[in-house]
Image 1 (spheres, helix red, strand yellow):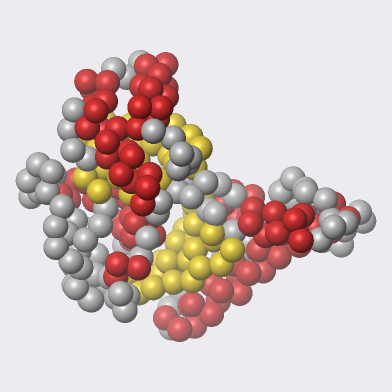
Image 2 (cartoon, helix red, strand yellow; image 1 turned 180 degrees about the horizontal axis):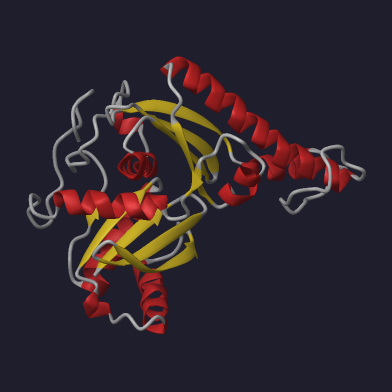
Length: 272
């Protein structure tokens, strides 16, 4: 079995694959202060509850935007699973040209999302990932990573209102009854939900105009379902897009990568 590990700023999501089938997934809080033994015991318990023995996990791949946790999960894989994990980064083959001025700046999650989305639709596409930040990743019709957009996530915006405006309450991020809020809570919810719908639709329109094409739009991340239900531009919501991308990258490297290898730099415009 393959363990895919998507380390984000807020949560870490683990997927257990047999071949191309996602058997189960685990979601845990990303805590920089935790040790590999703490996380290892937690992961082992969760796997056990799902009937997956530790020795069934023969391979692991990590995609991370939190460097301290990358090191911690590498240690976890060595100690608890007995092997060196593959880590998304320079030297790992993705099969996708990265047309960024500095390819090292592109987060691992954005790269694997782009790979999974293009594999899914086979044409120009935009991935909208509703995470701690809301990111837009743009892939050309030829399967090239062109770049994207980063904006503060919905949760960050809600927290900023609560912490910086003395009279505004913390609210649950749900669809309000109407766009025109009749209470302060509903007014904030309207701004968060419908405001982000407008943001998504406006940026997709501008990106499409620059591409001179009508790309497919795939949404993923925690609030993807909520926002996508209100938007006319999202074609599909894929909950585990990042985990699928990690699995695809591992499959592209499993026969060519020597054990424990980590190497090389990514050239601008080159395949990584």
